[in-house]
Image (cartoon, rainbow, N blue to C red; front, side, top):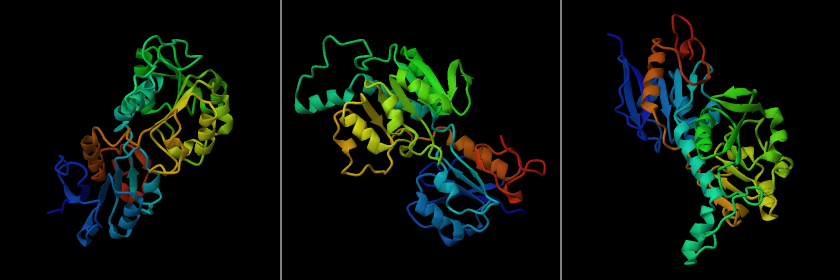
Length: 331
């Protein structure tokens, strides 16, 4: 009788999810080191483990063939040192709805200056933000109606967010690696983003952390934005030059920033972003809720058996990484 394939599931998710016949779930606590009994596992699901834990797990899993992170970001996983024959998959699509929802919340908080309203409430002041308000976004961004919204990083999250902004009256343009039209929205190539920044009221960044995206929003590009524009970042903190951003905000060169991600997390106590009056700080809270993870894990567990093509592959493994009809398969 063939022994079932063992897949390690973290206790940060439901470890009783249904897996294909021939696959056995082995729960583990990501707050502890993997026990020696984990050495026979061929699959590893990561959620809430951290980069140091993942690196430490590599030598403990000599039979590993598949790693599934539930995060959309996967840089720490591919850098952990897993063997070249190990298939690595990420959680793309699991966070589209939740991160888009958070980005919409930050966008609305920015346009209605929820930060100022909360400060006034805590101080017991009746804010002057009530009563008659300006509808001209060229003087101050006060409404999404007619706001020129630029989503830089028009993947699954951006494409989920765009209809929400349009429903509220936003004029939405996407930025991606290639130009075209996606879901009825105009999309321009990344090389052309400079041409759009001067006519942007709300810049929403959803870029990954790569060598090419590091500080892609630098002092020069910040200077291209109108002084009333707001920045929302729910991608990665490394994509924004925080020093240049803080300087522009302090000088009134930019309307404000609503940030969920930062170059260093947690945000250092001495960062000026904590105290600037036109900054909303969110503690990397946009994701954290992988919707549909059970189905993705079950699907790729079947791929581990060779029964289905892999989904969300970010690094293909060698012959031991699972096959379909005698060869690796990917969706």
